[in-house]
Length: 190
Image 1 (cartoon, rainbow, N blue to C red):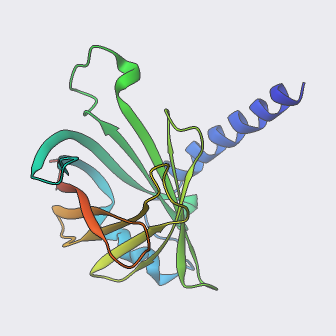
Image 2 (image 1 turned 90 degrees about the vertical axis):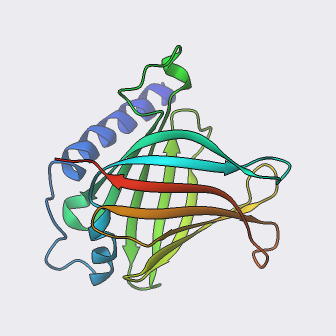
C-alpha cells in the first residue's frame, strides 16, 4: 500500500511540475533572484556535438550528440532542461538505450548557490550538484563522488546567443581536475 501511495504522489507531482515548469513561464519571474538571468542565453532548443576522453587518456573521440532543451521553470523561479541522446529524430535499435535526462535548477539566495538535481531514466537515484554562476560561466560541483570515486565539476562557458561550450572534469580530491567530456551546443533554427 505504501508503494502505491508513494507512486501516486510522484505521478501527481510530476504532472503538476510539468504543467508549471514548461507552460507556466516564458521569462524570469519579476521578483526572482537576478542570478536566473545567467541562464537566459541557454533558454531554447539546442543540438550538441560531443566528445569524450578515451579511457587510456590518449585522445579525444566523438560521442553521440543530443537534443538539449532549456526552459524557465517553477513559474520563472528556476530552470529545467531536458537532454536526449542520441537526438530524438535519430533512429536507434533499442529505445531503452536512448539516454533521457532532466535537470532541475533553483537558486538559493541565502547561500549564494544553485541547488541542482539530475535525473535519468536509467538512474538508480538522482545526482545532486551545487553551483555558482556569473554572466561568463556556470560552475557545478557534484555533491558526492561517483561509483569510481570521482567528484564531478561541470562548467558552462563561452555562452553566446547561438552557441555554448560545456565541459566535465573529474577529481578525487577536488583540487586537481582532469577534463573527460566536452559538449558543443548550437541553437536549433526556429
